Length: 395
Image (tube, rainbow, N blue to C red; front, side):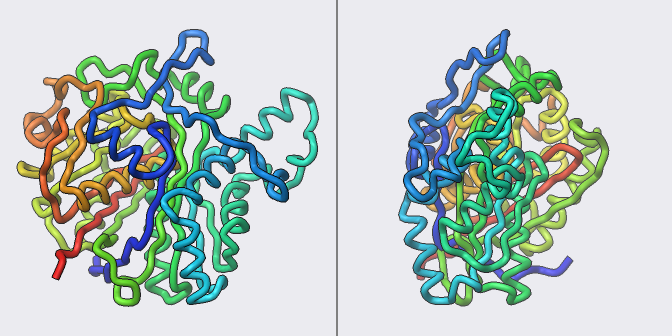
C-alpha cells in the first residue's frame, strides 16, 4: 500500500443535537454533556439525538423542503462554511469543485409523508427530491457546484468513505477542491427499521459498558472542505484512509473484525504511520453488544497506552450516514485543542472485553495533546472505513 500525499482540511462545520456550529458539539464534549432526549415515537420509547427548531426552506428553495435538506442548509450556513466554499469556487471555477456526500436515508421522510396521505403534495412532488441522491443534489445546487457529485450510501460508514472518494478525486487531478459531508435526519424508516432489528436501546446508549443494550439514533449534517495540502496549506490534514467490505452479514459484524482490520491496516499504510503513533481514536462505539465486542478486540490487537480511545455516540446519538463526518470533526477538535472527549453514560469498560482494550479506553475526558487521530466507522454489510488525520506543527 503506497503512502498518499496529505489533503488539507481547510474548513469544516456541523449541526447536531448539541446545537448549531461545530463549537456547540465541542463544548458538549468538554462538559461531558449528552444531547440525547427521550422520544416516545416507539411504544417502548427510546432516546434520540434530535436537532431542535429547524426552519422550513425559504422562497425559491421551498420545493426542496424536507427535514434532511433543512439540516443540510443549517450546516452549510454555520461556521462560515458556505462563504469558504464560495471563495474556492471563485478561485478555481464551479466545475473544479466536487461533492461527495454520505447518507443512509436522504429525504425519505418526504416519501413517508406522501404514503401516509396517499399522494404527493406540491411542491415536494418532484423526482429530484424523492431519491437517495436528493440531499446531495440540493447541496450541489445550493453551493453552486458543477463538478462531480456522488452520494455514498454504505450505512454508518457513508460519510467516512466520502473522504476516501475526495482524496482519490484530488490525487487524480479531477478537481481542485471537494466538499465532503454527511446528512441524515431522523425518520420513521430509520426508527422503526432499527427497532425491528432489535438494535435500539430504551435508555441512553452506553458504549462498551457491561450494561449496554443497543444504540440511540441521532441526526446531523456536517461538511468539510478539502484541497491538496501543497496548494492550500492547512494545519489539519487527512493523511490516510482505509476501506473494506467483508460482506459477512447484513447487520452483524464479522466475528473477527476482518473488514474493519483490513481498513485499519490500509489506513495506517497510506498515512505512513504505525498504530502506536495514533494519539486519539474515536471509536465506532454503537453500544450494541456484538459490535462493541468485535471493535474492542480489534483495538486490543493493535493499540497500547498512551493511545486514548473513546466513543461519542452517547452525546450525539448514532447519526448513521453522518456519523463519519461528525466523528471526524471530533478528531479534528482533539488535534486542534489537545482535548480528548470521554464516553458519555459509560461507567467503565465491560470486564468481559480484553484488558488491552480497557487500558486505552476512557470514560472521562482529558487534556491529552495529540498529533495524529483516527476515526473508526463500521457499517452494515461489512462496509468499514478508517480515517487518519494529523496536525502540522506551527513553524
